[in-house]
Amino acid sequence: MSKNKKRLLIASIGSALLMAGCLNMDTSNTNQNEDKPKATSKNTHTDERYVSVQDYTGEGYRMKGGEEEEKIAKKNREEIEKAVKEFFLDQYKTEVEVQHMIGANGAATVFVKSKGLLNFHTYAIVPINDKENKVFYNKVRSQPGDVERAMQTALYQISNKEEFDQLQKLTANFPKKYPIVGENPEFTQKFSYTGYVTPFFYIGIRNHALKPLLETYLNNPNISEEEIIRLYNSKQFETENIIFSIHLYMKEKTEKPDPKIFKQLSDEITNAAAIPSGSYRIHLHDNYVNKLTGLGNKENSLETNFNHLIVKQ
Image (cartoon, rainbow, N blue to C red):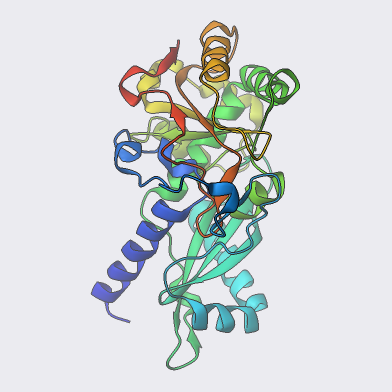
């Protein structure tokens, strides 16, 4: 495969993930959500393209093309998993376990979760020539910078463990206080790919804010948690470069996003003490997600304006 074809393949799959991937890419670039297409259906609870978020575990999740590639990937799953694991161990000094794989145009996209000290989700691209029924095990790739950003979110979590515990408790408690839910945990586990995630929130790292800490880890993957905390320097980054995106859904299928609840959620994040530093954006959707993309964003979704994020220092 030529270099130009490789670049085209990686770019096309990266674009597909950007449009179809587990909600969390909206935290990676400041302008992405301004251009993200939203569903225009007025009755998502009767539209066959949509499914209740509580029921959605990824059935129907697809990228453009890839039907034949997925068949080939399933037949060669064991070898693909081995190649992907070797890729991450060689390139990123980290063991991973495969969560799921789907076909894409000219490749299999493999979703993985790290093992060991760092806790992050990411993905790999394994080129496939469906015409020749051939898998290029020695050509495993990822979109440039995506794995590095995912690893940085995990390093940020380790460096701010107590604050993350507080944020997890706060967001996990939202469904107890309001008639809302988070993402189905099974979907989160199978299809997340941009770093440290939960069914309630995702993190985006802009401008490689924790690159020095990442380089330290790559030079010494046996580094301890204590050493990471010691080396972490909060002055290394601006809060605008750490973006938390909180996605919540109305619990009942017939309910539209409630502005009152959205305001209460915003106030809770604004007034929360001891949660991680960063810029926060809240999304409140109705009960439905698109089966093809896993996205809940629609015309009726309520979202924090990206130019007025909730900033926690």
